Image 1 (tube, one colour):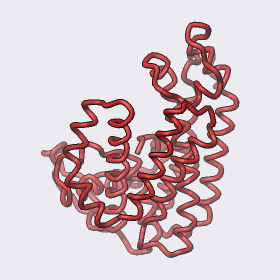
Image 2 (image 1 turned 180 degrees about the vertical axis):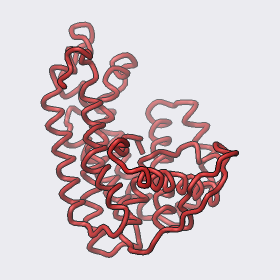
Image 3 (image 1 turned 60 degrees about the vertical axis):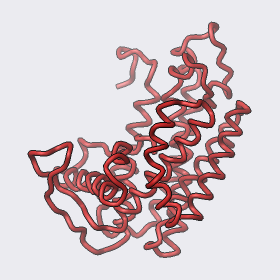
Image 4 (image 1 turned 120 degrees about the horizontal axis):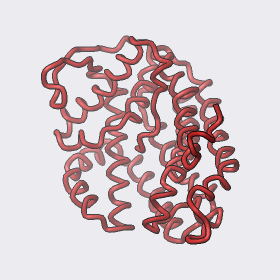
Length: 295
């Protein structure tokens, strides 16, 4: 996952923020208990949102404990443990991380990716036995995405759609949800995946200008190095990219509205209606001088 799916912290109650962090810690503990310590390095807050969302479909109260951990050895942290939604979110995190590492190795041959990939093989083997269909779908979709990127596709719809398919499959794969909720989750995950792909591309414009790596926005809007600054390019594409990003967020929120959320609604509402929008604004404002930013 990408780390863009976060809460708008100032708008959360203290109790809600503690619960949010307990799910984050729960995903971390779930990974450690089932796959070892090393994969915990891949933890992101995206997985906490997925855990909260899926857990919210059940009315059963979560079990929260206070525990020590490696990062916080002195002060105990609240941890949500032994919850199927937390375990599923942890599994999805590792499946997507492993697939991304394979993509990095195939496209760029990164040494760091090879090292991480080797350490995750044991966990991935276990996951392959539990989620064979999901892993096959993720692998097929990311292979399509890699092909489009190698072709330097200038189609934002095609590239974003493929990653949307990845996230749709990941959301749909939760077996504890009803068939109706899984269908809605699939639509929600697809829209979120398309947003994630484009927000990541927008965020990485400067880095990709420097390293020359593929970026669909640079291809679609015809950036020519040496003829235009990064700031000028961002200013030129801000309006159409903003439209696309908020369009996908709108699709996601419409799907989310169809779910029957039985708990954690204050937190998941915060992410869907506030956190994602705040992150979108933050990325879109890159390249705008502080004194030129709208209030």
